[in-house]
Amino acid sequence: MNEAQVLEIARESVLTLVMVAAPVLLVGMAIGLAISLFQTLTQIQEMTLTFVPKVLVVFVSLILLLPFMFHELQVFSEHMFDLMIAPR
Image 1 (cartoon, rainbow, N blue to C red):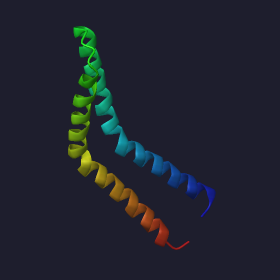
Image 2 (image 1 turned 60 degrees about the horizontal axis):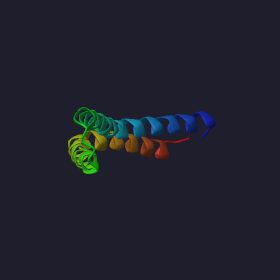
Image 3 (image 1 turned 180 degrees about the horizontal axis):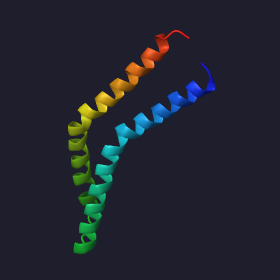
Image 4 (image 1 turned 120 degrees about the horizontal axis):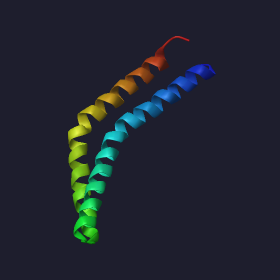
């Protein structure tokens, strides 16, 4: 295995990580922004108002995005296993 192959595997790993984590992080960021805007407009500064909806929305998004996340990880894992057994 040479340096180019190691860099290619590292690039694919980071890309897969971003593809798996980004949707949930973006949903969390969007709901956080919406709640912050709501709190600013209504001047309600309740701490639990920020956490409870965000946790619920992120949990629901995880449930909805789990098949996509699993598929991406499965494709990446199969590719890595193919590289392991490939003749050099």
